Length: 80
Length: 125
Image 1 (cartoon, rainbow over the protein chains, first blue to last red):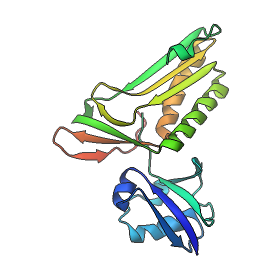
Image 2: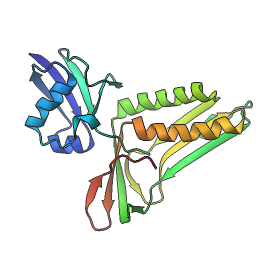
Image 3: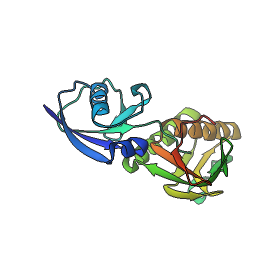
């Protein structure tokens, strides 16, 4: 089991009902973890439109999960 | 911010201000709110500015984005670039805006005149 800290923004934050949470998971990658999370939260965003960041830098959804990582789930941005 | 861009080598300064529009896809907008991931927005903004400086050979590039509530007509984003010649500056300012819309972790929620609100789907305009 890995401990993963998650950060949510915009409509993902609203759908999760929280801006952050810590979960235990066996998921191998960020993509696997997102699929797992869609069972816990009513996320509507297809994974094809999701991005993720570690240490304030975008990282592919295929990134393997390591224990005690903080992962920001980034829905499509709409700044400007 | 314009003063921060002062440089005797600069033959060109292009500044762009993106403002809150009163209509979105035909619907009357009452106001907007921008949510951000502050630490990453700072880091990504710095990366976008550095990339623009390298890519277009700029003297400098600055980006400011509003966070929180924004009224109609208010500036939501400000981009300023300096270069020796005008073409680099024009192209760089446009590239920075396109890249902000693609990468800067900022999300816009529009509240319409009828009281409903929604998160804006990404756009290329």
